Amino acid sequence: MAVADNAYSRFVQFAKITLPLLALALLSTMFLFSRTINPEDAIPFAEIDVEQIAREQRLMAPKFSGVTSDGSTITVTAETALPDMTNPRRMAATEVSAEIVTTSGTQFMVMSQDAVYDGDTDSMDLTGDVRLTTSTGYVLRSDMLIADLERTGLVSPGPVSGSGPTGTLEAGRMELTATDGSQLLVLKNGVKLVYQPSN
Image 1: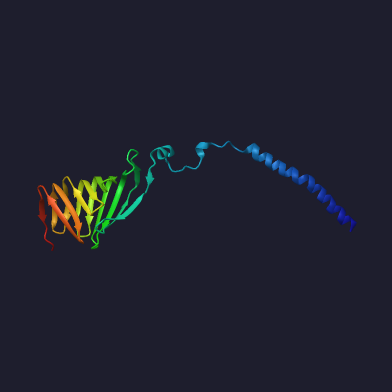
Image 2: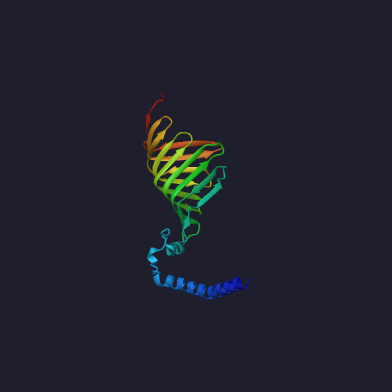
């Protein structure tokens, strides 16, 4: 029994010396063979100009919604929105999509590359390949569309072209109003309609 105790005591004494030395050797090899960290090898993150965002106070993927005085609901989404530093009631937005749903259930979808919202007049000027799609079957394009957000209304002050339930159409101006649950689309200034009867 004494022989076994002596062997165990010798093993413990041996381990007390050997194990710390082994740990020290492993740590030293880690530092000896470690390579210098290159900051350029860091994991790439999204390329965002933080200074520009802080300077411009830009909003990413904003969404606005509200109700007009005649009961239509309006939802506006954009890729970015940038408040006007000189007038906090004005805001510029890019890649804009606006949906208007009237009390009768008729839907208007407007998409544009750019837009400027004016809180003083409660209107939005949409520019850059503006496209208007209605649930009644109209698909119209224009360079500019003015949306009245106080009382449901859309105006194209310039040429408009597209298609409707009866065929293709062109006009120098378009006005769309929604009152009392009904919608009125008025085309003016050199209206051209190519009738295409349904089969």
